Length: 152
Image (cartoon, rainbow, N blue to C red; front, side, top):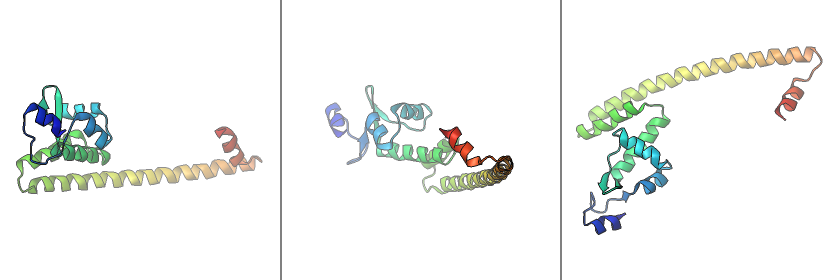
């Protein structure tokens, strides 16, 4: 990527800083170029441009990794943007850390609630399974044979 910068006669953002084209960044982070353009449209990423070519910095890569992590943890893009934008205005990162901690704690509470709902649903389904298997056995039918033949 440094070759492009040198050819255009523009200095990179920082001496020795890694830069990426959209295809390089997509490959590095295992996302599509379309996803990166979407995050750019949502103002989550702000690459510099050399004509039509997007040039992503190390900072953009870190932001993309944080976006992907936030998505994996179930945060909305608006929440992710809020936390990332705080980094820009909060030099000591105290407010950013507070917001991230608060949102993280709320997400944990949501997930614990979902985990309890899932545990309850599994318990009910297992009880139903036992009941239905017992009814089949009463009729002289092996419930495991039915499951095997239906799966084939």
